[in-house]
Structure formats: C-alpha cells, structure tokens
Amino acid sequence: MSKPLNENLTSIRFETEDGDLLPIMDVAGTKFNELINAVASHQKAGTLTLKITVKPSTAGAMAVKADVSITKPKPNLCSGRRRKATSWPKTRARPSSTSRPSRPSWCAS
Image 1 (cartoon, one colour):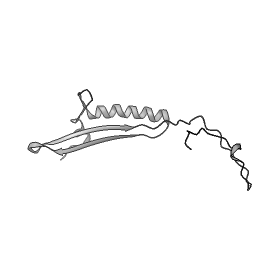
Image 2 (cartoon, helix red, strand yellow):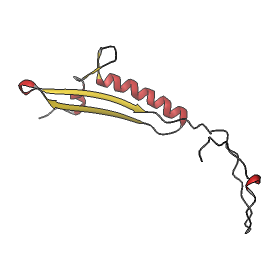
Image 3 (cartoon, helix red, strand yellow):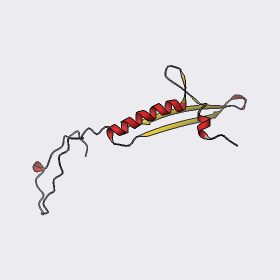
Image 4 (cartoon, helix red, strand yellow):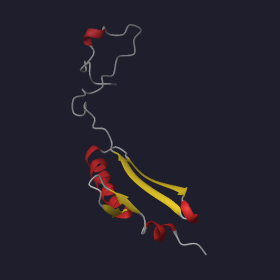
C-alpha cells in the first residue's frame, strides 16, 4: 500500500537561495501565512501553488523537485477614491460628460 501524500511530502526538501535545504511543507506553511495576510489585507483572492516534479534518475531512483509559490492579490489603487454612483433620470437625453463624476485617468473601471 502506498503512503498518503502528506507523509511523502515530509521527506521532500526545498533548496533556498542561500543553499539551505528546508522541508517543503515548512516553506509552504510560511508562504501560506504570507498569502493569508495579503488576502485579509486586500479582501481579494490569491493562490498558493505547490509544484512537484518527478524525474527518473540513475539506478532506478527518482529525482523529486518541489517548488511553492504564491500569487498575492493586487491592491486596489482606486479604493476609497470612487465617488458614489449617480442615478441618472430616465430621460432620452443623457447628461453631458462634464456633469458626470470623474475618476482619475489611471484608475481602471
């Protein structure tokens, strides 16, 4: 019978930029906490990706490489700057563009 994934992951190490080998689940846990803080701060979704690459190696062994990355939510540069939406009267003629609330040109709609 094969081992559960979480047991297999305990033996996989991640090489840091300094050359240290850390358990991949420790690295993933740190990244997960970083992601949770960013999501809570920006109130938008983010992702954590755990990538495990397995390649055949010499003498029947397997080379296992792991990588973990996060995609943090992007901050809303326009938050707090939007004006309240205006309800236009239901007439045929729309108000001129000069009477509409304006938003900064760099702020996407």
